[in-house]
Every structure is written in C-alpha cells, then in structure tokens.
Image 1 (tube, rainbow, N blue to C red):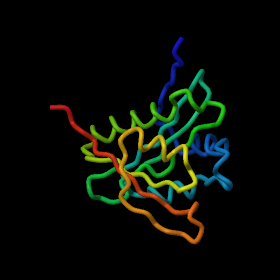
Image 2: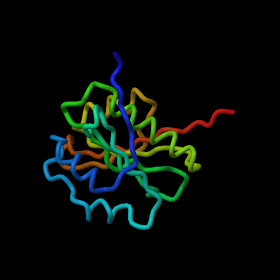
Image 3: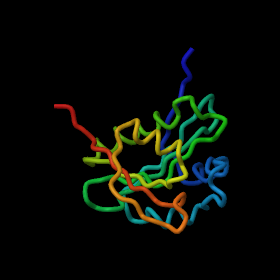
Image 4: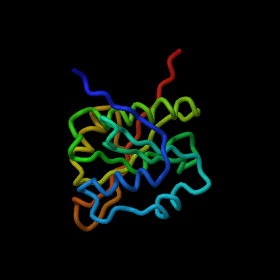
Length: 151
C-alpha cells in the first residue's frame, strides 16, 4: 500500500515545530528569523503530513525578483525519509510556483549535504554558482531548475 502524504499551506509556527526534528540543523531557526527572511515578499510555507504527523516542510519566497522562486529552507524528519516526502513537497512547490508565474526554482545547499545534492541533481536542478568557504565541506552551492509550462 502506498504511503499517503498530505501537503498543507500552514503558519510559520508549524514549520518551527517540524524544524526542531531535522538533525542536520544544529540550531533550528525560530519564528522571527523565518519571518525576517520572507518579510514583504510572496512566500510559500508548506508542511507534509503522514498519518497526520508532520514529516517535513519547505519555506520559500521571491528572493531575487527575477522570475525565480527561492526554496530557502527544506527538511524532512529522519523518521520519514525515503518515503517520498521531499519529492511531494517539491512537486507541490513547483506547481504552486508555475501557477504564480515563476519560471524557475532556485535553491542553495551546502557541499556536505550530500543527500540533498543527490536529490536536486536527480530531479533536474543544475549547479549555477559556488560560494567558497575555508572548509570545502561548507561551500554553498546554488542550483536552479526550469519550470516548464505544458503547451
């Protein structure tokens, strides 16, 4: 039987709760940090649920004002990984962004987030920029994916 994943647009408070379950984030952001990032910009705040339990989230906003939508934060609780949660979240974000008229999705991750890099390449993202840091594992990698509109 396939796992049923529900996506809901939610308040930032719900994301803050889920964010505390993401083991890679040493110091999870609080509500005010999220709000400051997307202040006065178009935003998308979604959480994925499996059996009514929050499994993962995405927070994105119009960072660049260039027709791209920026997926700023994404995470999946380790208990729900390898169940299609991130793909379901990203598919929702893609559809939402297309409906809003965005032409591409941009996302930045770190060189040491190997699972995320693998996922992004597998699902059509291309490397566009690397910001170097003293430790190569901390390099930031910007990727983007075109959103194609069916004709």
